[in-house]
Figure 1 (cartoon, helix red, strand yellow):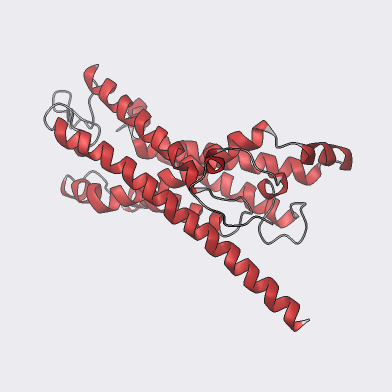
Figure 2 (cartoon, rainbow, N blue to C red):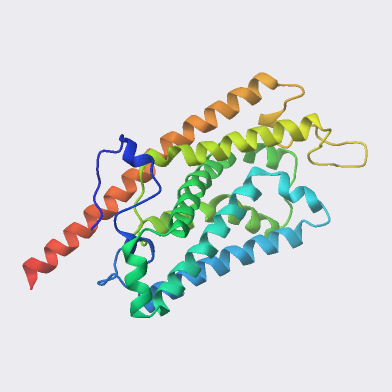
Length: 273
């Protein structure tokens, strides 16, 4: 069974683990084999997230079009959904594997598991970061500029900026996958990538929201205005990456809480049987 260990070790940076069975089952499965219920859960999460992204892309095709891809929110939730899809494939395949393939899989930690775990950590942390920055800083700007109109678009906005994190929070307490504090660098790498992307996009003449053919914002986000407020943009980038490290610590704490709850439940079951 996975345990909370010293979070500040070189081993905590690794994307390998000595217990492959933790990466394809629920914390609450009684066996190492993923249950049918867990397979259904994984497929359902992947399907809902995929449907939400498609719905938002269709709903904004006349206002954003190809610019849909320039926003960190949209890139983050896309990568998060890719993680959910890959995770559902891993769990489903593992559920229907024959005994011989299962034995071979358990002998060595698969590269696919490492890749999936990396996506899991990077975009779970990024989801919480996006949620905090949006509701804490950007939502006021969106409301003041009347950028989201109608019940449907408001629902999709909540999907992008809240349901993303709620799905991750739920998953932390369902999956058996461990969370390492040492994986803070994965979300930071995404932050570095997006900072670089936004800078190159601006330098290449890219624009943000357009109210007419001649009236376009010179930035993707007002807090990343490289043209008029480069200092604020740099401060925002650094601040967000530091926040990502802190959030990785919070997620590690939630993981330890899950293990504590599991231990208490097992202890209670033994003492009442």
